[in-house]
Length: 466
Ligand SMILES: [Zn+2]
Image (cartoon, rainbow, N blue to C red; front, side, top):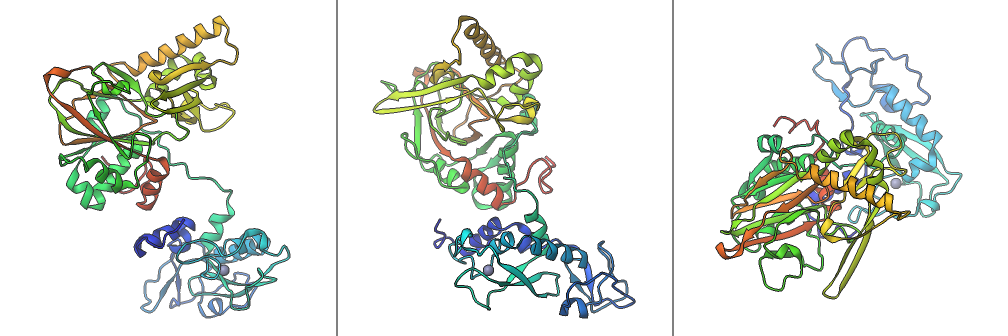
Protein backbone atom coordinates (compact mmCIF):
# COMPACT_ATOMS: atom_id res chain seq x y z
CA UNK A 1 0.00 0.00 0.00
CA UNK A 2 1.29 3.39 -0.86
CA UNK A 3 0.28 6.00 1.65
CA UNK A 4 2.53 8.79 0.41
CA UNK A 5 -0.41 10.79 -0.83
CA UNK A 6 -2.28 10.52 2.44
CA UNK A 7 -2.11 13.53 4.67
CA UNK A 8 0.08 13.30 7.76
CA UNK A 9 -2.82 13.23 10.20
CA UNK A 10 -4.16 10.09 8.60
CA UNK A 11 -0.74 8.53 8.49
CA UNK A 12 -0.49 8.76 12.25
CA UNK A 13 -3.71 6.83 12.53
CA UNK A 14 -2.43 4.20 10.15
CA UNK A 15 0.64 3.71 12.24
CA UNK A 16 -1.47 3.13 15.30
CA UNK A 17 -3.39 0.51 13.37
CA UNK A 18 -0.24 -1.30 12.38
CA UNK A 19 0.94 -1.33 15.92
CA UNK A 20 -1.34 -1.81 18.90
CA UNK A 21 -2.57 1.27 20.58
CA UNK A 22 -0.36 0.70 23.59
CA UNK A 23 2.64 1.66 21.53
CA UNK A 24 1.47 5.17 20.86
CA UNK A 25 -0.67 5.61 23.88
CA UNK A 26 0.65 3.52 26.75
CA UNK A 27 -1.78 2.58 29.48
CA UNK A 28 -2.39 5.49 31.72
CA UNK A 29 -1.38 3.67 34.84
CA UNK A 30 -0.43 6.36 37.18
CA UNK A 31 2.78 5.55 38.86
CA UNK A 32 4.40 8.60 40.19
CA UNK A 33 7.99 9.40 39.84
CA UNK A 34 9.89 11.61 42.18
CA UNK A 35 7.28 11.59 44.89
CA UNK A 36 8.10 13.31 48.08
CA UNK A 37 7.98 11.11 51.09
CA UNK A 38 9.11 7.60 51.76
CA UNK A 39 9.09 5.50 48.65
CA UNK A 40 11.19 2.46 48.90
CA UNK A 41 11.44 -0.25 46.33
CA UNK A 42 12.07 -3.81 47.28
CA UNK A 43 11.29 -4.82 43.75
CA UNK A 44 14.03 -7.14 42.57
CA UNK A 45 15.89 -5.32 39.84
CA UNK A 46 17.70 -7.65 37.49
CA UNK A 47 19.47 -4.77 35.84
CA UNK A 48 20.77 -1.43 36.78
CA UNK A 49 18.98 1.33 35.01
CA UNK A 50 19.16 5.04 35.28
CA UNK A 51 15.40 5.33 35.46
CA UNK A 52 15.04 2.82 38.23
CA UNK A 53 17.90 4.24 40.23
CA UNK A 54 16.79 7.81 40.15
CA UNK A 55 13.06 7.47 40.29
CA UNK A 56 12.10 6.28 43.71
CA UNK A 57 9.50 3.86 42.58
CA UNK A 58 6.42 2.84 44.41
CA UNK A 59 6.30 -0.75 45.41
CA UNK A 60 2.83 -1.30 44.13
CA UNK A 61 1.19 -2.02 40.86
CA UNK A 62 -1.83 0.10 41.70
CA UNK A 63 -2.03 3.69 40.57
CA UNK A 64 -1.03 6.02 43.33
CA UNK A 65 -0.91 9.71 43.83
CA UNK A 66 0.92 12.07 46.06
CA UNK A 67 -0.93 14.48 48.25
CA UNK A 68 1.94 16.75 48.94
CA UNK A 69 4.33 16.68 46.02
CA UNK A 70 4.58 19.52 43.58
CA UNK A 71 7.32 18.22 41.39
CA UNK A 72 6.22 14.71 40.48
CA UNK A 73 5.71 13.34 37.01
CA UNK A 74 3.55 10.42 36.00
CA UNK A 75 5.43 7.23 35.34
CA UNK A 76 3.24 5.19 33.07
CA UNK A 77 4.27 1.70 34.06
CA UNK A 78 5.02 0.00 37.31
CA UNK A 79 8.40 -1.67 37.87
CA UNK A 80 6.57 -4.97 37.90
CA UNK A 81 5.09 -4.31 34.46
CA UNK A 82 8.45 -3.24 33.10
CA UNK A 83 10.14 -6.28 34.59
CA UNK A 84 7.50 -8.64 33.19
CA UNK A 85 7.88 -7.07 29.76
CA UNK A 86 11.67 -7.46 29.84
CA UNK A 87 11.31 -11.11 30.83
CA UNK A 88 8.95 -11.60 27.89
CA UNK A 89 11.36 -10.01 25.46
CA UNK A 90 14.23 -12.17 26.71
CA UNK A 91 12.15 -15.30 26.38
CA UNK A 92 11.00 -14.50 22.87
CA UNK A 93 13.71 -12.46 21.12
CA UNK A 94 12.76 -13.37 17.55
CA UNK A 95 9.19 -12.36 18.17
CA UNK A 96 10.04 -8.98 19.65
CA UNK A 97 12.86 -8.18 17.26
CA UNK A 98 10.26 -8.71 14.57
CA UNK A 99 7.89 -6.34 16.38
CA UNK A 100 10.34 -3.43 16.35
CA UNK A 101 8.57 -0.34 15.06
CA UNK A 102 11.55 1.99 14.82
CA UNK A 103 12.27 4.11 11.78
CA UNK A 104 15.10 1.80 10.72
CA UNK A 105 12.76 -1.18 10.69
CA UNK A 106 9.55 0.30 9.37
CA UNK A 107 9.48 2.94 6.65
CA UNK A 108 7.83 6.00 8.16
CA UNK A 109 6.10 6.94 4.95
CA UNK A 110 4.88 3.68 3.48
CA UNK A 111 4.66 1.84 6.84
CA UNK A 112 6.28 -1.13 5.19
CA UNK A 113 8.99 -3.03 6.97
CA UNK A 114 12.56 -2.86 5.70
CA UNK A 115 13.44 -6.51 6.14
CA UNK A 116 11.76 -9.88 5.99
CA UNK A 117 10.98 -11.81 9.15
CA UNK A 118 13.08 -14.79 8.11
CA UNK A 119 16.21 -12.62 7.80
CA UNK A 120 16.36 -12.22 11.58
CA UNK A 121 19.21 -14.52 12.70
CA UNK A 122 17.91 -17.41 14.78
CA UNK A 123 20.53 -16.78 17.47
CA UNK A 124 19.71 -13.09 18.01
CA UNK A 125 19.80 -11.98 21.66
CA UNK A 126 18.48 -8.86 23.37
CA UNK A 127 20.52 -6.66 25.68
CA UNK A 128 18.93 -4.06 27.87
CA UNK A 129 20.15 -0.63 26.87
CA UNK A 130 18.10 1.26 29.44
CA UNK A 131 14.61 1.92 30.68
CA UNK A 132 13.28 5.42 30.35
CA UNK A 133 11.34 7.63 32.71
CA UNK A 134 8.02 6.19 31.60
CA UNK A 135 9.08 2.58 32.13
CA UNK A 136 9.67 1.80 28.47
CA UNK A 137 12.38 -0.69 27.64
CA UNK A 138 15.15 0.14 25.16
CA UNK A 139 16.83 -2.92 23.71
CA UNK A 140 20.01 -3.48 21.72
CA UNK A 141 20.54 -6.67 19.79
CA UNK A 142 23.46 -9.03 19.42
CA UNK A 143 23.44 -10.82 16.05
CA UNK A 144 20.90 -8.38 14.67
CA UNK A 145 19.43 -8.49 11.16
CA UNK A 146 22.21 -8.06 8.53
CA UNK A 147 22.58 -4.38 7.72
CA UNK A 148 21.62 -3.17 11.21
CA UNK A 149 24.46 -1.84 13.36
CA UNK A 150 24.99 -0.56 16.92
CA UNK A 151 22.78 2.45 16.33
CA UNK A 152 19.72 0.23 16.17
CA UNK A 153 17.78 0.37 19.44
CA UNK A 154 14.28 -1.03 19.82
CA UNK A 155 11.87 0.64 22.21
CA UNK A 156 9.03 -1.34 23.75
CA UNK A 157 6.34 -0.18 26.14
CA UNK A 158 5.24 -2.77 28.70
CA UNK A 159 1.65 -2.48 27.46
CA UNK A 160 2.78 -3.26 23.91
CA UNK A 161 4.72 -6.29 25.09
CA UNK A 162 1.76 -7.49 27.11
CA UNK A 163 -0.68 -7.06 24.25
CA UNK A 164 1.64 -8.74 21.78
CA UNK A 165 2.22 -11.65 24.13
CA UNK A 166 -1.40 -12.69 23.96
CA UNK A 167 -2.57 -15.09 21.24
CA UNK A 168 -3.29 -13.29 18.03
CA UNK A 169 -6.94 -12.75 17.23
CA UNK A 170 -8.37 -10.73 14.40
CA UNK A 171 -10.71 -8.11 15.76
CA UNK A 172 -14.03 -9.16 14.41
CA UNK A 173 -15.97 -6.00 13.81
CA UNK A 174 -19.10 -7.67 12.62
CA UNK A 175 -22.03 -6.56 14.64
CA UNK A 176 -24.48 -8.94 16.16
CA UNK A 177 -26.21 -7.13 18.99
CA UNK A 178 -28.61 -5.66 19.53
CA UNK A 179 -30.90 -6.96 16.83
CA UNK A 180 -33.96 -5.02 15.90
CA UNK A 181 -37.54 -5.43 14.84
CA UNK A 182 -39.81 -2.84 13.23
CA UNK A 183 -40.79 -1.21 16.52
CA UNK A 184 -37.31 -1.00 18.02
CA UNK A 185 -35.86 0.35 14.80
CA UNK A 186 -38.54 3.01 14.52
CA UNK A 187 -37.75 4.01 18.10
CA UNK A 188 -33.95 3.74 18.13
CA UNK A 189 -32.85 3.95 14.52
CA UNK A 190 -30.53 6.61 13.17
CA UNK A 191 -31.45 9.51 10.90
CA UNK A 192 -28.72 12.06 10.26
CA UNK A 193 -28.75 15.23 8.21
CA UNK A 194 -26.53 15.18 5.13
CA UNK A 195 -24.82 18.43 6.03
CA UNK A 196 -23.91 17.24 9.53
CA UNK A 197 -22.75 13.85 8.25
CA UNK A 198 -20.55 15.42 5.59
CA UNK A 199 -19.00 18.19 7.65
CA UNK A 200 -18.73 17.06 11.25
CA UNK A 201 -16.96 14.10 12.77
CA UNK A 202 -19.35 13.34 15.60
CA UNK A 203 -22.45 12.85 13.39
CA UNK A 204 -20.33 10.70 11.08
CA UNK A 205 -19.15 8.65 14.02
CA UNK A 206 -22.65 8.30 15.40
CA UNK A 207 -24.00 7.17 12.04
CA UNK A 208 -21.22 4.61 11.63
CA UNK A 209 -21.86 3.25 15.09
CA UNK A 210 -25.55 2.75 14.27
CA UNK A 211 -24.61 1.23 10.93
CA UNK A 212 -22.27 -1.12 12.77
CA UNK A 213 -24.85 -2.04 15.40
CA UNK A 214 -28.15 -1.97 13.47
CA UNK A 215 -26.93 -2.41 9.91
CA UNK A 216 -29.39 0.27 8.76
CA UNK A 217 -29.27 4.09 8.86
CA UNK A 218 -30.77 7.00 6.95
CA UNK A 219 -29.22 10.24 5.76
CA UNK A 220 -31.77 13.03 5.26
CA UNK A 221 -31.80 16.37 3.44
CA UNK A 222 -29.55 15.00 0.73
CA UNK A 223 -29.11 17.33 -2.27
CA UNK A 224 -30.92 16.02 -5.36
CA UNK A 225 -27.70 15.70 -7.34
CA UNK A 226 -26.69 12.53 -9.12
CA UNK A 227 -23.32 12.81 -7.35
CA UNK A 228 -24.74 12.87 -3.82
CA UNK A 229 -24.63 9.12 -3.32
CA UNK A 230 -20.93 9.00 -4.09
CA UNK A 231 -20.33 11.98 -1.79
CA UNK A 232 -21.97 10.03 1.04
CA UNK A 233 -20.19 6.77 0.22
CA UNK A 234 -16.79 8.38 -0.11
CA UNK A 235 -17.20 9.98 3.27
CA UNK A 236 -16.75 6.40 4.52
CA UNK A 237 -14.25 5.24 1.90
CA UNK A 238 -13.67 4.34 -1.76
CA UNK A 239 -16.71 2.98 -3.57
CA UNK A 240 -16.80 -0.61 -4.75
CA UNK A 241 -16.78 -0.97 -8.50
CA UNK A 242 -18.90 -3.64 -10.16
CA UNK A 243 -20.24 -4.22 -13.65
CA UNK A 244 -23.02 -1.82 -12.68
CA UNK A 245 -20.39 0.92 -12.30
CA UNK A 246 -19.30 2.87 -9.22
CA UNK A 247 -22.82 4.24 -8.94
CA UNK A 248 -25.94 2.98 -10.65
CA UNK A 249 -29.56 3.88 -11.12
CA UNK A 250 -32.70 2.06 -10.12
CA UNK A 251 -35.37 3.31 -12.48
CA UNK A 252 -38.27 1.79 -14.21
CA UNK A 253 -36.97 1.37 -17.73
CA UNK A 254 -38.03 -0.72 -20.72
CA UNK A 255 -36.17 -3.97 -21.47
CA UNK A 256 -35.08 -4.45 -17.89
CA UNK A 257 -31.89 -6.45 -17.45
CA UNK A 258 -32.54 -6.88 -13.77
CA UNK A 259 -35.72 -7.52 -11.89
CA UNK A 260 -35.10 -4.38 -9.77
CA UNK A 261 -35.78 -2.14 -12.77
CA UNK A 262 -39.34 -3.25 -13.14
CA UNK A 263 -42.34 -2.23 -11.13
CA UNK A 264 -43.11 -5.71 -9.79
CA UNK A 265 -42.95 -6.55 -6.12
CA UNK A 266 -39.33 -7.33 -5.33
CA UNK A 267 -38.98 -9.75 -2.43
CA UNK A 268 -36.35 -9.68 0.29
CA UNK A 269 -32.88 -10.15 -1.05
CA UNK A 270 -29.23 -9.14 -0.77
CA UNK A 271 -27.25 -7.78 -3.68
CA UNK A 272 -24.51 -9.53 -5.61
CA UNK A 273 -24.36 -12.81 -3.71
CA UNK A 274 -23.10 -14.28 -7.00
CA UNK A 275 -19.74 -12.49 -6.64
CA UNK A 276 -16.97 -13.72 -4.39
CA UNK A 277 -16.94 -10.65 -2.14
CA UNK A 278 -20.45 -9.19 -2.10
CA UNK A 279 -20.83 -5.56 -1.06
CA UNK A 280 -20.85 -5.00 2.68
CA UNK A 281 -22.69 -1.68 2.49
CA UNK A 282 -25.29 -0.57 0.04
CA UNK A 283 -26.38 3.04 -0.40
CA UNK A 284 -29.60 4.09 -2.11
CA UNK A 285 -30.29 7.76 -2.61
CA UNK A 286 -33.88 8.61 -3.49
CA UNK A 287 -33.82 11.47 -5.98
CA UNK A 288 -37.41 11.26 -7.25
CA UNK A 289 -40.34 9.27 -5.94
CA UNK A 290 -43.76 10.38 -7.02
CA UNK A 291 -45.12 6.95 -7.91
CA UNK A 292 -47.90 5.31 -5.98
CA UNK A 293 -46.48 2.40 -3.98
CA UNK A 294 -42.84 1.38 -4.17
CA UNK A 295 -42.23 1.47 -0.41
CA UNK A 296 -38.84 0.17 0.67
CA UNK A 297 -38.79 -2.71 3.15
CA UNK A 298 -35.92 -3.71 5.42
CA UNK A 299 -35.52 -6.65 7.75
CA UNK A 300 -32.77 -7.62 10.19
CA UNK A 301 -31.95 -11.15 9.06
CA UNK A 302 -29.94 -11.76 12.24
CA UNK A 303 -33.06 -11.11 14.27
CA UNK A 304 -34.98 -13.41 11.95
CA UNK A 305 -32.29 -16.09 12.32
CA UNK A 306 -32.49 -15.80 16.08
CA UNK A 307 -36.25 -16.39 15.99
CA UNK A 308 -35.76 -19.20 13.49
CA UNK A 309 -33.25 -21.01 15.70
CA UNK A 310 -35.74 -21.01 18.57
CA UNK A 311 -38.70 -22.02 16.45
CA UNK A 312 -37.03 -24.51 14.12
CA UNK A 313 -33.83 -25.73 15.82
CA UNK A 314 -33.97 -28.93 13.75
CA UNK A 315 -33.64 -26.91 10.51
CA UNK A 316 -30.64 -24.75 11.44
CA UNK A 317 -28.08 -27.32 10.43
CA UNK A 318 -29.72 -27.87 7.07
CA UNK A 319 -29.67 -24.16 6.22
CA UNK A 320 -26.07 -23.95 7.46
CA UNK A 321 -24.74 -26.84 5.41
CA UNK A 322 -26.65 -26.72 2.15
CA UNK A 323 -24.83 -24.59 -0.38
CA UNK A 324 -26.99 -22.59 -2.73
CA UNK A 325 -25.66 -21.51 -6.09
CA UNK A 326 -26.16 -17.87 -6.97
CA UNK A 327 -25.80 -16.98 -10.57
CA UNK A 328 -25.78 -13.95 -12.84
CA UNK A 329 -25.69 -14.96 -16.49
CA UNK A 330 -26.63 -11.98 -18.59
CA UNK A 331 -25.36 -9.24 -20.86
CA UNK A 332 -21.90 -10.69 -21.37
CA UNK A 333 -21.27 -11.50 -17.71
CA UNK A 334 -21.28 -14.84 -15.97
CA UNK A 335 -20.87 -14.87 -12.20
CA UNK A 336 -21.57 -17.72 -9.83
CA UNK A 337 -20.96 -18.52 -6.20
CA UNK A 338 -22.19 -21.17 -3.81
CA UNK A 339 -23.04 -20.26 -0.22
CA UNK A 340 -25.32 -21.55 2.54
CA UNK A 341 -28.13 -19.40 3.94
CA UNK A 342 -26.50 -19.28 7.39
CA UNK A 343 -22.79 -18.68 7.19
CA UNK A 344 -20.92 -19.18 10.44
CA UNK A 345 -17.76 -17.75 11.87
CA UNK A 346 -16.14 -21.11 12.31
CA UNK A 347 -16.03 -24.34 10.40
CA UNK A 348 -17.19 -26.88 11.35
CA UNK A 349 -20.32 -24.87 11.74
CA UNK A 350 -21.98 -24.37 15.06
CA UNK A 351 -19.57 -26.60 16.98
CA UNK A 352 -21.85 -26.52 20.00
CA UNK A 353 -22.45 -22.78 19.83
CA UNK A 354 -25.85 -21.29 19.37
CA UNK A 355 -26.73 -19.77 16.03
CA UNK A 356 -26.76 -16.33 17.69
CA UNK A 357 -23.15 -16.73 18.73
CA UNK A 358 -21.77 -18.17 15.55
CA UNK A 359 -23.74 -16.48 12.78
CA UNK A 360 -21.48 -14.34 10.62
CA UNK A 361 -23.63 -13.55 7.59
CA UNK A 362 -26.98 -14.50 6.18
CA UNK A 363 -27.09 -15.17 2.45
CA UNK A 364 -30.55 -14.57 1.07
CA UNK A 365 -31.28 -13.77 -2.52
CA UNK A 366 -33.90 -16.16 -3.90
CA UNK A 367 -34.25 -14.20 -7.15
CA UNK A 368 -30.70 -15.02 -8.14
CA UNK A 369 -30.73 -18.61 -7.02
CA UNK A 370 -29.70 -21.22 -9.51
CA UNK A 371 -30.09 -24.60 -7.84
CA UNK A 372 -29.21 -25.77 -4.35
CA UNK A 373 -26.12 -27.94 -4.34
CA UNK A 374 -27.58 -30.79 -2.35
CA UNK A 375 -24.99 -33.19 -1.06
CA UNK A 376 -27.41 -35.98 -1.87
CA UNK A 377 -30.28 -34.73 -4.00
CA UNK A 378 -32.91 -37.19 -2.93
CA UNK A 379 -36.57 -36.38 -2.87
CA UNK A 380 -36.94 -36.33 0.91
CA UNK A 381 -33.98 -34.01 1.44
CA UNK A 382 -35.16 -31.56 -1.18
CA UNK A 383 -38.64 -31.49 0.32
CA UNK A 384 -37.16 -30.86 3.77
CA UNK A 385 -34.90 -28.09 2.51
CA UNK A 386 -37.82 -26.41 0.77
CA UNK A 387 -39.78 -26.47 4.02
CA UNK A 388 -36.83 -25.13 6.01
CA UNK A 389 -36.18 -22.26 3.57
CA UNK A 390 -39.86 -21.38 3.36
CA UNK A 391 -40.02 -21.15 7.15
CA UNK A 392 -37.15 -18.63 7.12
CA UNK A 393 -38.76 -16.64 4.29
CA UNK A 394 -42.00 -16.44 6.31
CA UNK A 395 -40.16 -15.03 9.33
CA UNK A 396 -38.43 -12.44 7.14
CA UNK A 397 -41.83 -11.32 5.88
CA UNK A 398 -43.48 -11.17 9.30
CA UNK A 399 -45.01 -7.78 9.92
CA UNK A 400 -43.44 -7.17 13.32
CA UNK A 401 -39.94 -7.54 11.87
CA UNK A 402 -40.21 -5.50 8.68
CA UNK A 403 -39.37 -1.82 8.79
CA UNK A 404 -41.22 -0.30 5.86
CA UNK A 405 -40.72 3.24 4.66
CA UNK A 406 -41.54 5.17 1.55
CA UNK A 407 -38.28 6.86 0.68
CA UNK A 408 -38.74 10.58 0.34
CA UNK A 409 -36.66 12.47 -2.21
CA UNK A 410 -33.58 13.65 -0.35
CA UNK A 411 -33.25 10.47 1.71
CA UNK A 412 -30.33 8.07 1.39
CA UNK A 413 -30.50 4.73 3.10
CA UNK A 414 -27.28 2.89 3.98
CA UNK A 415 -27.48 -0.74 5.05
CA UNK A 416 -25.32 -3.76 5.62
CA UNK A 417 -26.12 -5.76 2.54
CA UNK A 418 -25.32 -9.10 4.17
CA UNK A 419 -27.27 -8.54 7.33
CA UNK A 420 -30.26 -6.39 6.39
CA UNK A 421 -32.28 -7.78 3.51
CA UNK A 422 -34.20 -5.29 1.42
CA UNK A 423 -37.38 -5.50 -0.59
CA UNK A 424 -39.62 -3.14 -2.51
CA UNK A 425 -43.35 -3.00 -2.89
CA UNK A 426 -44.82 -2.92 -6.37
CA UNK A 427 -45.43 0.55 -7.74
CA UNK A 428 -47.54 2.08 -10.46
CA UNK A 429 -45.24 3.15 -13.25
CA UNK A 430 -47.86 5.46 -14.70
CA UNK A 431 -48.45 7.43 -11.51
CA UNK A 432 -45.16 9.31 -11.52
CA UNK A 433 -41.39 8.97 -11.57
CA UNK A 434 -39.12 6.88 -9.40
CA UNK A 435 -35.37 7.28 -9.44
CA UNK A 436 -32.96 5.90 -6.88
CA UNK A 437 -29.21 6.06 -7.26
CA UNK A 438 -27.04 3.47 -5.59
CA UNK A 439 -23.46 2.63 -4.62
CA UNK A 440 -21.63 -0.10 -2.75
CA UNK A 441 -18.76 -0.26 -0.27
CA UNK A 442 -16.60 -3.22 0.64
CA UNK A 443 -16.32 -4.61 4.14
CA UNK A 444 -12.64 -3.67 4.42
CA UNK A 445 -13.51 -0.05 3.75
CA UNK A 446 -16.25 -0.02 6.37
CA UNK A 447 -14.11 -1.76 9.01
CA UNK A 448 -11.21 0.55 8.33
CA UNK A 449 -13.36 3.60 8.94
CA UNK A 450 -14.81 2.13 12.12
CA UNK A 451 -11.32 1.47 13.43
CA UNK A 452 -9.83 4.79 12.39
CA UNK A 453 -12.66 6.62 14.16
CA UNK A 454 -12.47 4.28 17.14
CA UNK A 455 -16.07 3.14 16.80
CA UNK A 456 -16.61 0.25 19.18
CA UNK A 457 -19.39 -2.24 19.81
CA UNK A 458 -22.36 -2.00 22.17
CA UNK A 459 -20.18 -0.65 24.94
CA UNK A 460 -18.86 2.31 22.98
CA UNK A 461 -18.29 4.79 25.78
CA UNK A 462 -19.20 7.73 23.62
CA UNK A 463 -22.30 6.39 21.95
CA UNK A 464 -23.95 3.65 23.92
CA UNK A 465 -26.72 5.93 25.13
CA UNK A 466 -29.20 6.41 22.38
ZN1 LIG B 1 14.03 -1.41 14.77
